Amino acid sequence: MRGVREQIRLLARLPWHVRIEGPSGSGKNVAARLLHVLSNRARGPFVICSLAMLPDGIAMEELMGHRRGAYTGAIEDRSGAFERAHSGTLFLNEIGTASAETQRTLLQLIDEGSFHRLGEARVRSVDVRIAFATNEDLEARVAGGSFREDLYHRLGMLVVRMPALAEHLGDIPELTDSLLSRKSREAGVSVAPLTTGDMRRLMAYAWPGNVRQLDRAMEHYVAFGRLPDTIDRAARPSDWRVQVDEVLKRCAGNKAAAARLLGVSRKLLYEELRRREA
Image 1: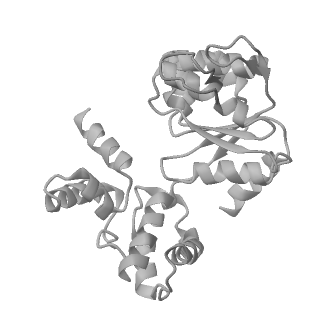
Image 2: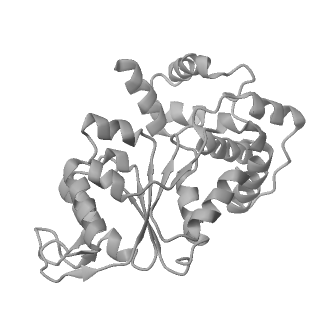
């Protein structure tokens, strides 16, 4: 991860857009924020806009904003993500899920650097650097026709790859130390340090939910003084489906409860169940 940080430090000095790739929960949001903090835009705003499954009209409004009276329910002027990020960094998360209409809007915004709010004639100009994240293969989506090739090239070729936690298990001691310190401060409690046995279990686990799952595991440790039962030395990627089935059975099919016990987000659990149905 020091190598990843050094790469981010190098790219932060440059004015161009950056793509952050990696599996869900690997820390793409953290990487984007670090890119901003280390750049000459650090005094400007850092704005997050998630494009995951946003309908066309909503996505366009999120990006460009609207004028009061633009549609029923628009009772006041509202700035969009590009305007709020002026002179700073705009983090477009899950860009691989953007619809065709949203992609067209993004292409126009990037090409022209100007836009008008929905229902407004006034043209507004912005100076924004984009960090965009995806856990999908954008090249494959371009080849398949579901992602615009011209937008793909406008977003540039500067890439930071966030590895899965299973690829850098040696960072777990530092990560857990940092996470436990922050979680104990947030909770206003002191916690006992992890034992050698705890650390062995953490280092042996497969971490399908990546750093986000480790973060939730540290919350569990702060709350109960022990690691979640699912952090098992024998757990490996091939055992993940068995583990999910066992926890779902214990929770009588309650997915939200199962996700909490597994230490992963509900989204990741739903993705796993959808993959089985495909």
